[in-house]
Amino acid sequence: MTRTRQYQLLLCLCAIVLLGLTAWILNQTYGVEALHKKAAIIRAGDDYGRVRSILGSPRDSMKMRDTNGLGALLTGGETEWWAYGSRLHDLDWRHPFTRDFPWIVPIKWHFFSPDTNDVAIYFNTGGKVTHVFIPGK
Image (cartoon, rainbow, N blue to C red):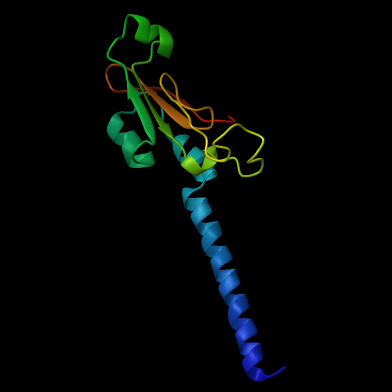
C-alpha cells in the first residue's frame, strides 16, 4: 500500500470519527434525553418566561378561552398546554408500510391534548405551571 493511500484511509477514518462525535454531541444537546432533563428542571409555579428560557418555543400549544364549559370538560380543566418534542419522533421508519397511507409520515391532530410522546407543560389561568408531563417517567 502506498503512502498516499494510507493518508487517504487515515483521513477517511478521522472524518468518520469526527462525524460520529458530532452526531453524539448534537444528540446529547438536542435529543430526547436532553429535552427530558431540561423539562425536569421546571416546577409547578414557574411562569411562561422561565419555561421559554429553559425549553424554548413550544412545537404545539393550545389555549382555552372557555374555562367552565365544554372546553374545560375536554381538556380536564387546564386552560393552556405547551408541547415539546421533535417531529422526527412522529415518523415510523421501522415499519413504514404496516400503517395506512401516508405510511411513514403520520397526520396527527392535537386538538385537546399533546401527543403521548411529547413533553407537555400545563398552565393555569394565571400563566403559572400546574404540572409537567415527561413521557416514560
